[in-house]
Length: 134
Image 1: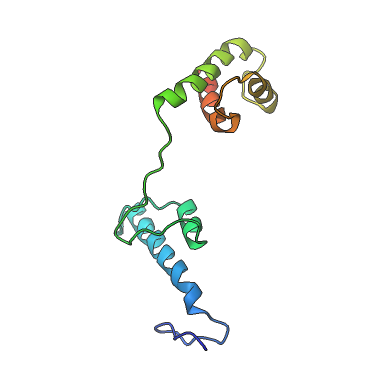
Image 2: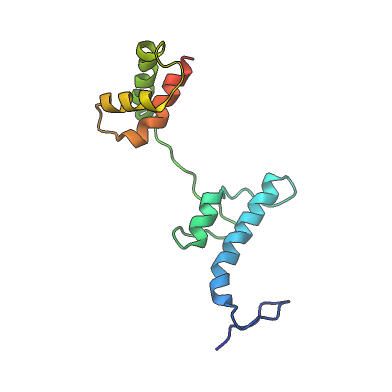
């Protein structure tokens, strides 16, 4: 059985309106956010490209069109202070040898990182601390 035709369009035999419905809702949110970002209407929905892709793929819930996506929580200062301090102190020690962050420096810092927080999680914070001293 063919899907009901989409308004204003004559559906070819290969068209599936049921698959389109989820994507249509996501693109509607993306369109509304884009209009807001361009200051030509729309609404602030906290809709980023990652949200659009995840929602269209069914990996993330789609809020109602009048509801914003929940904000991304990036952690507390207490979570950021130790890795940023580590990066800041590393600059004192390695700054002359490594005036710019690079792969060799990162390997050394990762090898010396002794904390329960995994390196991939703290890496951006360590780098922020390192780059602050520049």
